[in-house]
Length: 161
Image (cartoon, rainbow, N blue to C red; front, side, top):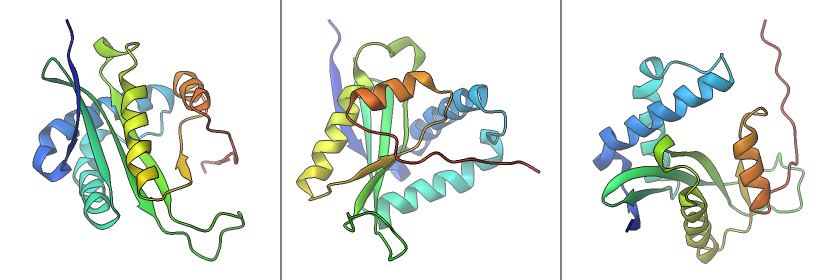
């Protein structure tokens, strides 16, 4: 029988574990978008960024352990809105910046449980808006996100020169 445990972790204290999963996430993103930076080129700065966001912006990193083995994670942090926003909601929002489930554990509802726990934590803190991005051709992630009640509000266009 498989035992799933979801634990909050400090990224700085679990650097190797989180960085390894971030690496896999970036490999997947690179397969969907060839402009995704190589993890070796950004690991240090990106890991410093998520550690800072966890420490300075009420960030939460949840790791799912299946039978004691890390199966995946989700990470989000709180962003303050400034006066450049055009939406009605002006409170703080949760930005879900990263998430990943190892290939061998996908399809078991683990990411859904991580997402639900992350949302529960921030709803209890009074957050009423959650934002997240995914690549336009990441149909699996888009399907999941939409099934959880998220709606597309903007499309980002890019032109690489």
